[in-house]
Amino acid sequence: MKIQQCLLALSISAAVLTTTPLYAGEPLVNEQTAGSVVSTSEKTLSQLIEAALSNDGTRRQYYAEAQAMRETGKASATLMDPKLKFGVTGLPTDSFAFDEDPMTNISVGLMQQFNRGDTSDLNDRKASQQAGGLEVKVSARELEVANAITQIWLELGYQQVANKVLLENRSLLSEMERFIQTNYSIGKSEAQDLINAQLQVAKLDEKIQANEQMQQRLKAQLSEWLGSDWLINTDQLEASNQLDWRALQDIENTASNSNFYSQLNQNPAVRMVDSSIDARRTQVDIARESYAPQFGVEVMYAYRQSNDMRGQPASDLVSAYITMDIPLFTGNKQDKNLAAAQYQVGAAQSQKDTLLKQMNAKVNALLVDKNNLTQRLERFESTLLPQADSRVKATERGYQNNTAQFNDVILATRDELALKLEFQRLITDLNLVNNNLSALLNSYSYQVDKPEITTTSEQQ
Image (cartoon, rainbow, N blue to C red):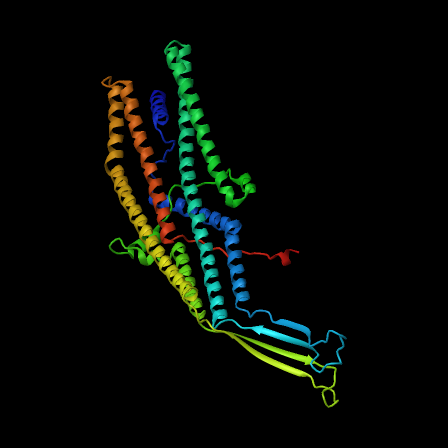
């Protein structure tokens, strides 16, 4: 029995050390256990995403910029401040007396300029539309963070599976080393076998350390959103390379003929372009208002101290004016501004069309990867893995009956292990594809409150 365990450990070590990607998969479990593991993993992942979004400074930045834009819109929709006019009129230069000439007066006036047409309301609407685009940018940031954390989570889960297999292999190799050491002491094993076993254990220790380094690096990447203090409590973090994507599947089923435009229209990136289109259309309306005249009102009161020609105190004077500028020469100004605004609308619409085509192409490309990965996984489960298992058993029986060489056993077991490793890699790649599809089709399920921002006056 110990001989068979040693042979198995040696073949596993050879497979691990010759396989390029350092990933390994656990034996297949029943669906109930797998579903429980996935459910627990998704719950932890959702908590991490929600905590990361709550701590994300970029998300707060975009939300603050949106509120700033709304306040700017309200300010731009307000009338210009009135102008106060104060002065002296008709003061004689020979005496500088205020009561000598009836034309001398001290005047005070108030001037108010009004915006053209509905420009104020349109400026407010444009700022509100731009603020809406910035708020949608917050949602885009949420998708970006959720996608990045999920990707790290899947890779971390894969590394943790590999770590478990490496530790199990090291335990078997250590037992084999002790077995050969015992046989060597009684002359039943050669020194070359003992040295080789010790070398395999040392190499496996190196692989384990490299695996742990990768795990620590992935956890450190999560600290970008969760903070450096979070790294203290990551030893018990159990990730997974499999997640439940039923919500994504429901969205995929609603599309027809590889057309995902209706779903992609809900993506924050597309909605941001929609907000830009609305704002530019409002700018067209603002440009049209430039053809309307701009009015102003001026009221003045003049105080006089002198007497009139009849010797009576001169009455004070009141003046009122209405000013209006008439846009008569519009060819080089208003017409050009209107044309420029209309071109901007066309450019934004073309940007949206291009973006939708690019995103729809990405979705279809990912679906091609998904379909091929699914077919490859089915082939692994139905053909490759069972055949590899049968080959290992046949070579083991042949070695026991002296009809097969020891290298044949190692080669068969190494091939089986390589297939199992590739099978787990395909599972992870399939989940990564689903993760990218979820980012495009917006199928993540997380709940997070609006960012809390504090103005400078509140901080003081």
